[in-house]
Amino acid sequence: MERRRVDGGAEELAILFEITQILDSSLDLRTVVEPVLEVITRSLGMKFATITLVNRQSGEISIEAAYGLSASQKKKGRYKLGEGITGKVIQTGKPAIVPRISEEPEFLDKTGARKTHEEGDLSFLCVPIKLGREVLGALSADRPASKAHALQEDARVLSIVASLIAQAVRLRQSAQEERERLMEENLRLHDELKDRYRPSNIIGNSKAMQGVYKLIAQVSTSDTTVLLRGESGTGKELVAHALHYASLRATKPFVKVNCAALPEGVIESELFGHEKGAFTGAVASRKGRFELAEGGTLFLDEIGDLSPALQIKLLRVLQEKEFERVGGTATIRADVRLITATNRVLEDLIQREHFRQDLYYRLNVFPIHIPPLRERRTDILLLADYFAERYSLKTHKNVRRISTPAIDMLMSYHWPGNVRELENCIERAVLLSDDDVIHGHHLPPTLQTAEASGTVPRGTLKATLERVEKELLVEALKSSRGTMAAAAASLGVTERIMGLRVRKYRIQSRRFKGA
Image 1 (cartoon, helix red, strand yellow):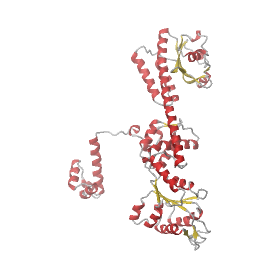
Image 2 (image 1 turned 45 degrees about the vertical axis):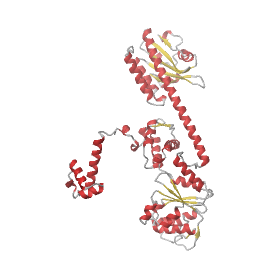
Image 3 (image 1 turned 180 degrees about the horizontal axis):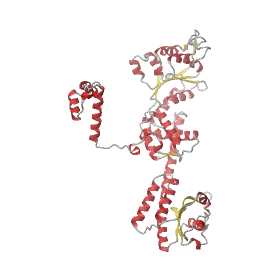
Image 4 (image 1 turned 120 degrees about the vertical axis):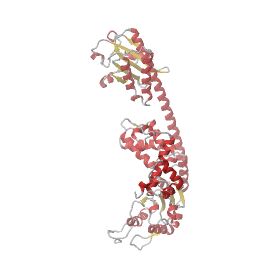
């Protein structure tokens, strides 16, 4: 390998700058030490380079990373304090220079790498990696035998690199300590909230969720009908579970029905059951969900999609606490606590006569609004960590952390699919991870930032606004089939303003006629 000199200050700075960039690229030292050793061997003309670390428990010294050694040779590189050149450097905390290893009896060559070297004698340089007064390990390198001044120069550069590595260790230790402190604080807050309100099956410490926990605690021990409101994917079913298992009915059945998932001809039988021969295919009598939930809780999800005919029957159950099976005449009493949920605005459905107002009043006795994920951003990282751990176990992986760029992407996204979308994203990321870390590139394209995806907007603000304005004008003319008055009305501007804008952008409105 050709020897590169580092006598010039500019070249030395370039080498140290490159090493600093590598050390700053990841919080995981194991991923950066080998690239650092590669730079050392390439820049200083070395043959081998190794980092050895001390095990605090056993006191044994072993090779953590190496460049130029095979895996089997690395395993052989084990020392005790004071043993060989490396052991003495770590014991004393002082660097060592061996001009010719063939003439040094204390050089042990435990890896056996130097025995196969056929390009002449080698010099050996070893410097301590120190954090304060504590010696963490050593940085060593072999190079073709050279004069004393060249070896002293290389040892000086290695000492600077060892200092950079020690500083990186210190920063990572501080980051780890801060992370552990935050985790302890989160656990403390988690336990405090759990003691006060929080159900064990729901993740989240945000202020918005604390309000939900308080409402759950207030209503769970009663038989009051609860209406859960919120966007799809916010966790309404989890809240329904929490209400049931914190109630006096916890030992009784919890039965759930998705009103939007079943066709109208089937859902009546599902809810109330049917008698034998009630309709084609009814070969035997069957209990409905109300009977199956006797003494417990019935959770009706997507209640806003219930048909008008079934709304009437449900209203009767709420008022009279009784019903009949489909095709039957016997009246069945219903001792059931009802919890319903919807992501639709029931008030709008009432205005359009798609939902009965009297049923609405019966259901809306105790409403609980489940906030969307964008309104509880402090919970995003807690949820992401929970899902990462959960799917690591399911997929037999060991994902231990989420990288800082990935955290930034999770925190800046608007999450239209709420907690369900976050769960799906983390499940996908765990499957893609191959280094026990969730990185930004493991997340779906919808979460990618402009910088990460290479789609940073170009052009000035004025040019961007004009481009958007022109697109709006074209779309309005296309929708109105070239009629200026209709296009102007859809955009909320006068025909005069519309005409001026069309002329400004030289849009031919005639080409949209009949489109």
